[in-house]
Image 1 (spheres, rainbow, N blue to C red):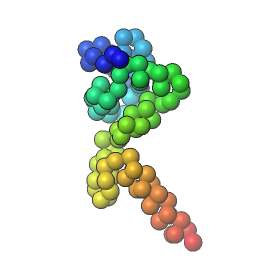
Image 2: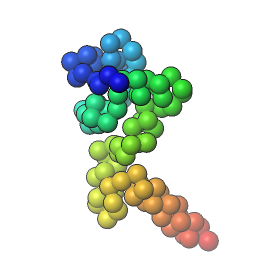
Image 3: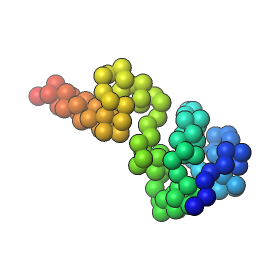
Image 4: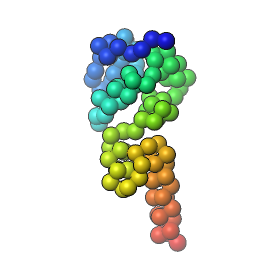
Length: 102
């Protein structure tokens, strides 16, 4: 199992690792994404899931990653800053909108 080496990433809107596509960033978040990726995944593990058709963000979410904007939103709304907290926040928002529609 080979760990990611930060110097092997090429940055820009599209991030690659040794010439292989990693992810695309239109609106930022690259720093936290790459930090989490390097700390929590091996090269083989990440690219195996990517080649299986799983989206880059979903791969990281499988180990607990949240976008910085989502973390701030959950914190301000009083929810735990976890994937479970994000899912609960979404369910509560859907339920409140359904209650208003009735």
